[in-house]
Length: 289
Length: 321
Image (cartoon, rainbow over all chains, first blue to last red; front, side, top):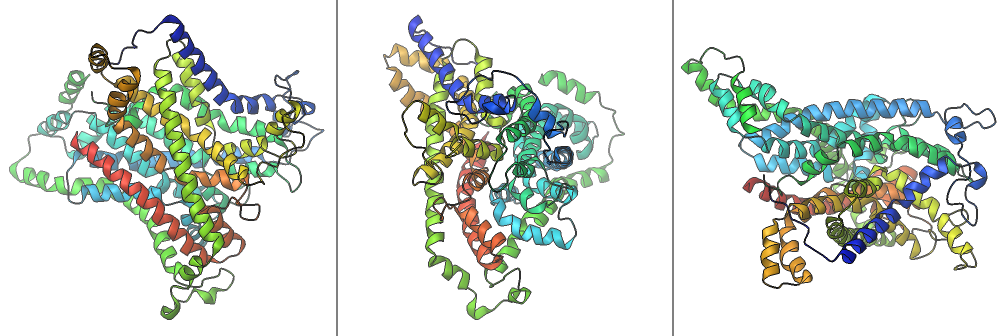
């Protein structure tokens, strides 16, 4: 594919572009850098006027107290429980929405059937319903079936919330695989399911990775539904647990920064390691080839 | 790539050639098979989205209060009471238009910023991967984290913004950013823009880098200025990417809730109230599910119409391929 060559510019002009771009992006990343710095600061440097930009001394105090290793400072936040719940909920819901979304995405990409467009649109629209509108009746429903404040209940809800976007991505990825492959498989006597399972699925693996990451991060970061459907360390996830650092009059900003950094770890790993697939999945349909 | 995989396809274990009867059922199954694949998704969505929506629609026509189960009953004579009440509720009307205005302003600003940034980044000649990593940093933040982080920066007593301005002498007394009008809603908008610009930029950047260079060379030969090239070539050719970016964004409208909820929760005195926070207040603090459901129906209609419009366009462009 032809890509657009950078047109020749004067050297000085090019240098200005480079500098401006780096300046803007560094400024944009500054809030994040501040959070990371603060999590490693000694308490005396937090919230002072004038602000201390670079930590004068690196300390792991705030992380130690998160896990209850700091005897002088009782955090009282069950971070271990939140981490377990977040990991369980995200893994369960990601596995399920990947399975559902891959199957449905395949159906939409390969088969013409009655109501094809309508069903696709309806599934996408289900994602556009604001969480707050779902959360009230869902709370009552979950209470009736005894799933309030359980990891399974929350994961089940996330499956429904994340599957539409997974379908959207997988539909795009499957459309990039030539249809001739299925035809060839049918001629060789494969059933529809075998063709899907043996031929298309292996080729769609990179797409599935990207879709899984989107689903994982969406569950990992979700707050609105979790805040209503979970109550105790039994099922509370990281985003809901962040509230534990606020009491009525004071907020432990440094502890919160440390927990924020912990919470960002999966995102950092995923976003950096799969940049290319992510962009490909999102832009499918616009780039040909 | 394609040749290699078709080879793999033909080496699959070959089953005995199908008899004619089987062939007929093969064709018949073509109509059923896609539905079998979609069915599990439909069941889950029916349970988690459709059922609650139907429930909400029903409740929105009743005076249901969670603390008084008897109010669950439906009274045809008085079914529109919640909707009538909403029309007369100044806080709701204010929240409604504030939400629309907030979405319109932030989405457009995000788009303009992302467009500018993507054009700039496309021209950068060194450190592309560092640039991309820097760009993606805000994407690693959960909306809740963005909310807490900006609530902290704009905090009146301990916030970084006040600390900087005070130590530079630009302010003499600390400013209560999140309390005052309009700085409260502006701070929330800033947080939302910070969170959303990177995704849009990345999609537009991928688009810009995929544009054919011949068109630009031809334009250059014809003596087109940089602005003309941007206006006449880049912008029209980027349209499909703009559509994708907007659609991805529209699926996330609700995420603004997390930020507002954490930064101000609609307060003080409803100054930054949005539909979503007001629904939460009615339902969770006041247990007035009937009224809250009527409100959330309004927000559903707005959200769904917006997404419906964008997705119809997008599905069209995808099916044409």
